[in-house]
Image (cartoon, rainbow, N blue to C red):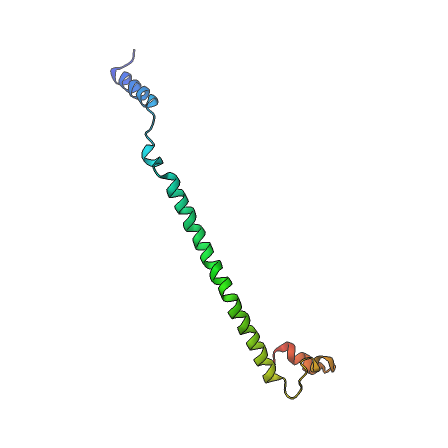
Length: 100
């Protein structure tokens, strides 16, 4: 025969199986919380891409200015930027590739 404790335990398990969990509190405003979390993650990505695209024109102008400055300093007397390359001067080509 079953002990009184076993009967009480079986009754307790039966009641637990019949009882449905109350999820109303966790479901309350779930969509709002989910959309807020998605929006927050999206804003982090958008912030970096916006700053990157805003910096592109400035960085382009900086690269062009450095290129013009470098050309004007190293060009010597010639006005043609390809004069050293087209003349067949191998030493000039090697020094250009080496960054000298």
